[in-house]
Amino acid sequence: MNKQSIYGLTLEQLTAWLLEYGHKRFRATQVWDWLYRKRITNFAEMLDVNKECVLLLADHFVIDTMEEHVKQESEDGTIKFLFRLKDGNLIETVLMRQKYGLSVCVTTQVGCNIGCSFCASGLLAKSRDLSSGEIVEQIMKVQLYLDTVNPEHKVTHVVVMGIGEPFDNFTNLLNFLTIIKDHKGLAIAGRGITVSTSGLADKIVEFADANMQVNLAVSLHAPNNELRTRIMKINRAIPIEKLMSAIDYYLEKSNRRITFEYILMKDVNDGREHALELAELIGHRRQLVNVNLIPYNPVDEHSQYQRSELESIRAFFDTLKKQDVSVSTRLEHGVDIDAACGQLRSKQIKKSKENSLTKDSMVAG
Image (cartoon, rainbow, N blue to C red; front, side, top):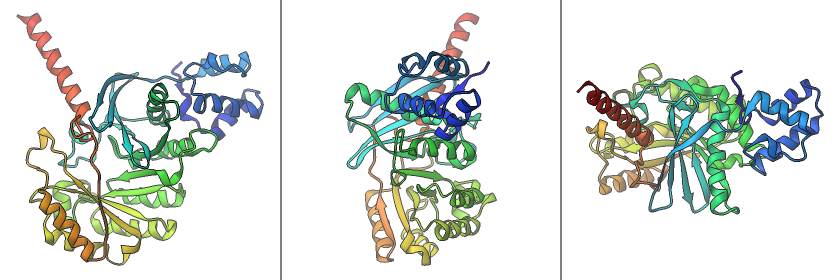
């Protein structure tokens, strides 16, 4: 039997499952507490849960579905984990130490099909979605690591900005958010969670209707269709007009601020004319929009793109400010440890292929 991750069940789903097998409702709360508060790694460690229930859970579920393959630690304290899944696939998860707490960036897919021309994540096409349990387990792996360093340290913030397009794995994303927000478990506040999308308009509308009460960021990176299509092929299917219509629906439905992520690339999208065009695009939405400027992390395979000069970043920032647009610049983390999303995974897979070819040539020789 192919067992699923216990982390993939919400408390409501776990309760319903145990009730179906004849157990009392309180058993689910007990199990939940052992998983997320006491953070056991083996069902047998649940000391106050009766043996019948423990055996039932162990027969149908697993706790551990991934192992640490590589761990890189930056001088600034950022840690990038490369996890190997049960099927051999590799995913990245990043722990960032912020002034406001400990933040974890999670991956939602193995590979990515969005195909942004500047991004390391899209170097390898998507092979599958992660289950909600696999997404939750990334948080748990990082928290278990923190427990060994300092039991007082807790994950307080989550960004869904790792490998993959979260809205292309929509159902599992919503399950994941429900699980990590649950006040009886990890209890991560909605205001401390940000989901990033490349701009799947229909899913932005669905996300508004789902009322998850978390933050939304949209990877915009260009103020017009011609430029955005050139660097983000998704814009061919979902042009800026359709995207902004979905954003308007989201803003009206949720009354929550939205962030436009804007990676600055030298002589591509970092001119004063681009800043003015971006301000015009934002238009009447100024009160509910913040632009987050991101210095580009160069990727070997995308050598046509370079990081904007500091003067250009400052000029872009100042131009938006003068247009009464709320703007911030992302604090960089882990620039010395394959900082670009998907970069470590891509390098490890490339290295593995090179080693395999070397072995094959030695055998052939």
